[in-house]
Image (cartoon, rainbow, N blue to C red; front, side, top):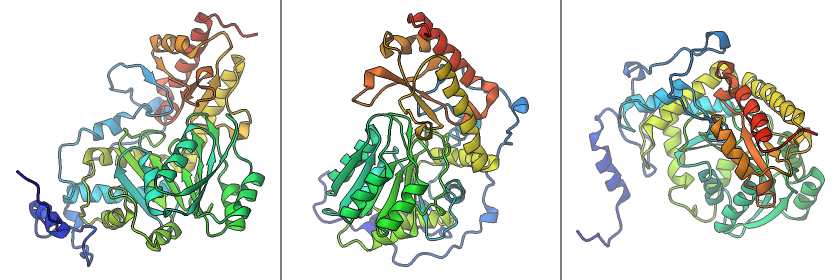
Length: 446
């Protein structure tokens, strides 16, 4: 049939979608002029099944997953059985009361993960990869012709800069040599020379394993350029590195489900401050994206968190339920305890790497991430030769992706259940595989 050439009446179109809802559950959309009151009695909703969580290795049940190579790349990571089981939840309406309640709890738990109690801050969970977070920032928080300062420690810092340029931002980039990060004095100099709408920093660049310092950076920005928004790419850091959203006065952190949060890939997760939301609301031009528009998503997220059914675009109920389970485990353990556990495992792995006579891409210990390690290969060993040997031993590492050093290093991801459940033995298995694989490649420690 031919398509209508006339404009689509959005409220009318969305009202058709809501016809499968019971009359007692009004559908909120981005086009709703007045928000419907919360008249859902959640006490009558089906109770979400929960699984007992344990942090005691001796009482941890063995995984019921089929035998498979241990995935130790910097994301996706290995997943807990309970999280994967949540993915098998029966099909349900994305605006039905059961899912609405779970989504609301999920958004509220994200506040605890990011350590924010500010009611003006807003979490977002959208279907998409972590990269969608860049678009969310670029399409809503900066307008064409405005200036952005990008701090790059590798491939993903460069990518964030490219994304901002696509949306019309004027980008100034401070890039560090592989294995290091931009220093505060040069950042202060740049902030003093021009007024920037926002500054972006990659907390952990997955291409190099470099950890950027956030607390002192944010203090610098607020002192030198107080109107500049502080935006963090936390795709490889959220849930394994300390992020204190309120105390550090961050304005945005974008991340993804498949890394340290421990949920299968497919969800773009972010937190924005009240100041960032206000910056969006003060725009002089419309958002430069449709799907990534905060105009469309902000009321949806607010309604879901208030346990009101809403619709703009269909979320994945199964992925959101898996995220709900993963966040429940994180909160039960305690976020600070989780950060500490990742540091302990990271220290063990980095000591083992040093014992093998190998060097890290991130030279300064203060710049080394706790959820991954980028390891320089010996001169006589090629990644294309070593990685298959590791795979034959049931361990999957990642090759290098930083264009300047790609063939010279490999990447070992150690996040989530692989370090939090010692009974799996993933860390020990990986270290032994690395040692044996290097030996088979002809490497001998000097």
